[in-house]
Length: 115
Image 1 (cartoon, rainbow, N blue to C red):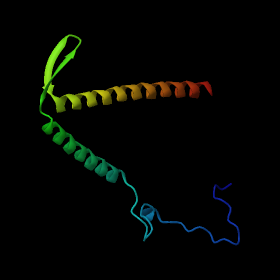
Image 2 (tube, rainbow, N blue to C red; image 1 turned 90 degrees about the vertical axis):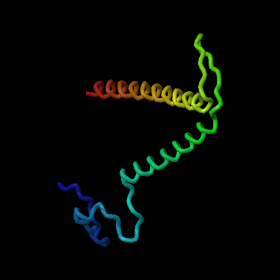
Image 3 (cartoon, rainbow, N blue to C red; image 1 turned 180 degrees about the vertical axis):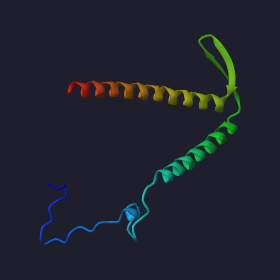
């Protein structure tokens, strides 16, 4: 028994592409998406964001007083806002990691129960 789909007599058989040409896009079509291209784009966007953040920090150098749970300190305002954003991002990553761990445990439990 073959896994090839049946071919009707009124349709020409599908043409096979040689293995070395399988990764090439057909002529006239746009270039295919690659991981290297995605990494390059992400790095470019990341550096642009970094430049904007550096400009923000250099323009907000006025020192601000902070108090938290009995601690007292002063930081430049731009640095304080950046630290708050980084802490918020880390909290988001921790929550996402906990959720992924929870879903993986449930998937393993479900998979082992199906046997």
